[in-house]
Length: 254
Image (tube, rainbow, N blue to C red; front, top):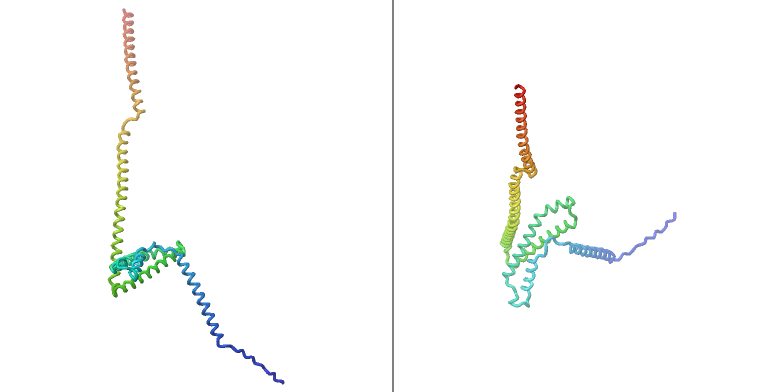
């Protein structure tokens, strides 16, 4: 048998080929992540917040920008106590909003599970909850910048202020409701008094004779008065007849 010579072909691969392959994969992955993040950020910007604009946070940022501005003069530069007070007001508003979200969290979950609200509303709630968590973390960092360990006394004071303001709002709401309820009470009292007066005025009307009954009684009285003379006339005529008959009998006997 003739031995056939087998030719082995060797493919030469350069060292840069796997590096280029890995580089292409990494660039594709980075491009995909960048596009995905940009799209996610656009979707988040379209989500409308549940609460309105946080004026306390914007005021604190404005005061801090003036405080850290090196070109600001002493007259325009706010005092550190002013910054601390603004930060305290920002914390009070953040605590109030976070408490509101925690109170309504089971309601949103129940409505979402039952299909009564859509994905957009539930995503809006989740976005607001995450935003409030980041807000509180930022406030903690700001308090540590002013004084280390101030967080332990800062948040209890802010929570107490938040509860006092909530109680004050409820009392003011009760004052407004008391006025409206007093007006309603007077209205219903007037209605009840009007019903009682109409009921009292209607009772003598039912006992008094009606106009038709009065007319019939008045008509019956002349009829009775007319009937009485007729009876007297009948009696007089009968007496005359009896007298005549008696006279006739006496004349016959004679």
